[in-house]
Length: 305
Image 1 (spheres, rainbow, N blue to C red):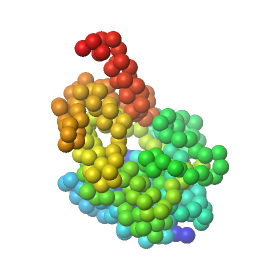
Image 2: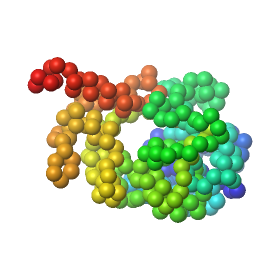
Image 3: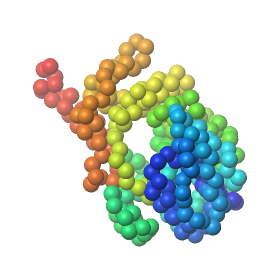
């Protein structure tokens, strides 16, 4: 089975270079790397034994969904492996996915290890990555068996997954009417389940997520999260991203109205500081921030006000 790796990229040149270097160490190299470039210039990337095709979409308001769909549509293999540009694939990732695709249909989700800041300073060292990488506390661990069904589509994340080109077409792809950040992954998985496609957790097919500053909950994407949550509700008849919306409510950023969520104010530096990932943390945690906000809301001072 031929394998294409698909990604979308904007900025973060070194992260993408590290992905390419990681792919060059694959025990089973891909047939190609297809990059949907969400900027005006192509990337200067290392030489590889496999072709790299960069499809420039420009930098003006390109939906993430369009980027992933473009990469998938232009891929030439039976199996599509989707990686975010800040992921470095383990040498066995492609082989693990190809082996599982022989017996599994639908969406397959591999493992993810989160690297702390500075983990790649000395280059691509998988032994070091495995020693320092952390599992995300808010995501299920790898199954004890080689694979296990994922029965909650909300667990899907496009950071590291694979499916056949045929199943991707059957799913309908990512909905390009989601604009900005938030909701398009959950919508994609919801649509795949509606199309009769299963979702699988895999043991293996591991990618290492490179550190970059981030916010969780994503207050820096407040407007698009609220708009996409409402779009998802209109499309499927039920809400999504409720933990983020709850956090935004407790922060006084939004409130529920008869016509959906209403934005009360823009985030301040205090809000950004609350949600900002610290350099000592390999990943940001919505749960930690939400727990703090819930505790503050239950405090005697908050109840008295």
